Length: 608
Image (cartoon, rainbow, N blue to C red; front, side, top):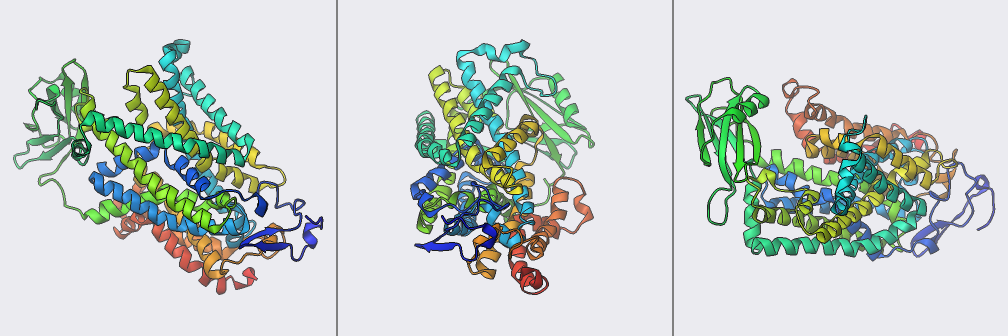
C-alpha cells in the first residue's frame, strides 16, 4: 500500500469483482485499528461452507434446543411451534442478508458501517446497545456451559461438589466446584478471543459436524426408546396446557383437571395425591402437604371458600418421592376466550425474530471475510433457518421421548427440557462425559461468535487507537462475570415476552435505520475512506438516524412497561399491548420509513 497521510488521501478505494478495498494505509487515523479497517480482498477467505458452519455453531445451543418449549407452553402444538421457528428465522434472514451485503462489499464491521446512518460519534449509541445485549447473553451462555463442565467432572470426581463443604461461596451464591467450572469455561473463551477472529472460523468448521452428529444421536435415542416417530410425537399433547387447571364452579367449589402420565399398562405413575386450596401459593402448598392422600384421578372437585384463589396438588410416586404443582383458580366460566393469532402466534413470531435480531445487526462483522455476495447469501440461507428448525425439533422430539423413557416423570412439567438435566439422568459415565463435552462445545461455538465478536468490535470502536479486538473481548468477558449470570437466570421471568421481545424493539429500530440508509438513501454506495476521517462527510452525529431510531422505539415503550408490571394494563389503551406484540416489526417499519424522509428534509444540511 502507498504510505500517504490518511488525511491527505482523496481516492484511496478500488474495486475487484464487486468487492471494494482501500489501496492506501489509514492506520494513522484515530478512527482505525487493525481490527476495524476494511479487510483486504485477498484476506476474504470465507466460503459458503464456512458461513454455514458459523451458523450451525451458533444455532446449535441449549437455548435453541429449549426454544420450542416456550412456544408449546403458550398453547401451540409441536407442528405450530416448529413452523413458527422456521418462519421467524426465514423472516430474520432477510435483514441478515441485507446488512451482510455492505460487510461483504466493503470489508467493514458493524460499528464502522453504522457510521453512515448514525454518524461517526452517533455510531457509539447502536454499537454499545448491541454490545451490552451480547454481554448479557455471553454471561448466561458461559454459565450454562460451565454447568455442563461441572457435570462432566462430577462423573469422575463426585467430590467436586463437596469442596469447602459444598457451601455456597459468600456474595456469589454458588459452590466452589461450580465457580471453578464456570471460570475454566470462561478462560476457554478468552483463549479463543486472544487467538483472533480467524480462530473462530476454525473452531466453527470442525465443531459444526460434531454438533450435528450429537443432535442426530439424541434423535436416534428418542426414536429407539419411544417406539418410533408417531408414538413419541403423540406425547407432545401433554405440553400444550398446564398439567393442573382449576376452575371455580357456580356453587363456589373448585374443579381440578389433571393431566397425569400413565405407565404402558394404563396405570397412573403417581401412586397417590394430596390436594388443597388457599389464599396464596404458599398457603395452598402448605395445606396440600398436611392433607389426606387420595387415589389418582384426572378430574377432582374440591370444596373451598370463595376467597381461596390458588390450588395445589402434591403428587407422590411409588418410591415416596413427591412433586408439588400449583395454579391460580380461574373464575366461573374459565375466563374470557382470546384471539389465538393476536395473543399467541404474533408475539411468539416476534420473539423468534428477536432471537437473532442481534446478529442481523452485526452480521457484517463476519460477512466482511466472505469471498463474495453469493457465498454469504448461500451460507446464511443454508445455515440459519435449517439448523434452527432442525435443532428445535430435536429438543421437542427428545423431550417428548423422555416422558416415555423415565417412569419417575409423573407430569409434563417434570420433563427434562434442559439437555443438561436430561443427559445427567443417563447412568453410563462415558455417555454422560461425551454428551456434556458436546454441550460445552455447542455453547462455546455459539457464545464466541454470537456474543463476543459484537461487543469486542463495538468496544474497539469506542477508542480504536487504544482498544483492540482482543482487549474488547476481554472487557466483554469480565462484564460477563460481573453480572453473575446464575443469579440473572434464577430471577429471570417471562423469557420470551420480556427479554426477547423487549430488546427486539431496540434492535428493530437500528436495523430499520441501517437498511434504509444503505439501500434507499445511499443506493448501496459508501465512501469507504470517509468512514475513517473524523471531520469527513460522516462526522459527528447523524440526527436523522438517531431520530428515526427513537421514533421507532417510542411506540413500544408503554407495552414494555406493562409487560414488566411497572404500570397496570388498565392505565393505558389496549392498543399499546398490541403494538408491543409486534415490537421488532413496529420499530423496524417506523425507522425504515422515517429515516430517508428526515435525511432529505429536516436534517438535510447535517447530511451534507
